[in-house]
Image (cartoon, rainbow, N blue to C red; front, side, top):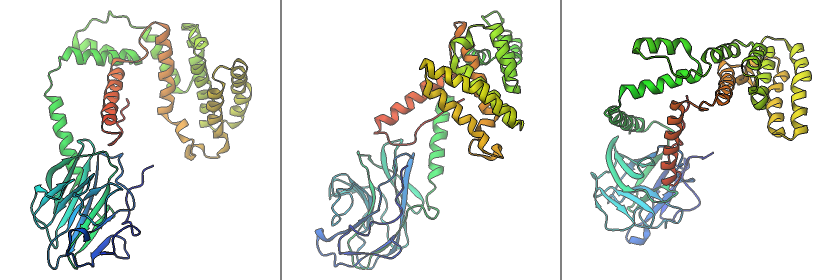
Length: 401
């Protein structure tokens, strides 16, 4: 778990600066006569990388003589007697001229100058792979491409009595980071909506999903409205629908019996699915408050499944772990509010129904997942590959249906 910066590093900084007791305010106490007596400070930890954007702000409290304040980022090898942006793997935005700096001391025009009373922000946009700055809540645009990092928020001072205070997120920022992300997401959505896609292709994906999961009534309504012929292979749709309804209603024993009647080899060929059905039967007893019956079911059914798995060495570890988790419900007087309460939810029961449905489809030679799920898996794979190409930085993309 990444920990974001919380305060300034009070052990590593030049004697030209003084860090105040709040560990967020810093004052320049040197003379600032030479290029080598810059006073720069960094935070205690680097910017976290599992976010779309990392951002912090600096309030310029006081400027007395020159305005030599520079804000930015630098890596752990940064020399603290130099301005951020002058050294390798560092970035800076300076107050006196509004120049930006990256790995050189010359700089180049970028934004407006800033001084006492201004709030200057510095951010890393991991999704775009760039560093940006803000002034008084206004986005100034991308400054430079992002290097390898990791990077620490870094502030440099070089004029007597200059004082700044960092905001590392303890209080609201002047700049609205979420608004920037929402604006970018809206632009992406507009680009997606502008794509041309045949309605028949969309209908085919939806129909395949309904067929895959056995939503008979919705599927027939869709076919009636669209005028489609329901002559495709239905993969025992009515039986699969009935099995789903039995599981979702909690009648697990009937679901097991009907599966064996309609699809004799499915549960025999899929012991994991059979185990999950029996575990769900145990969970149903717990949810009804039938503790004594649940204990008996555990002793006569679940324990037997565990012993069979152990003797056959067929995923015995996974079987034992699954059974151990569900029988843990017995330890709580109020399992609905226990750490295992997710086992009692409708969504958990739906997962069991989905796995039974997938096993039946596989026995019929049908794909084990719908086209929609395949598309989503491809999208997630592409997004994760993009993140890997960015050095595993940025939000971790997840999407399920």
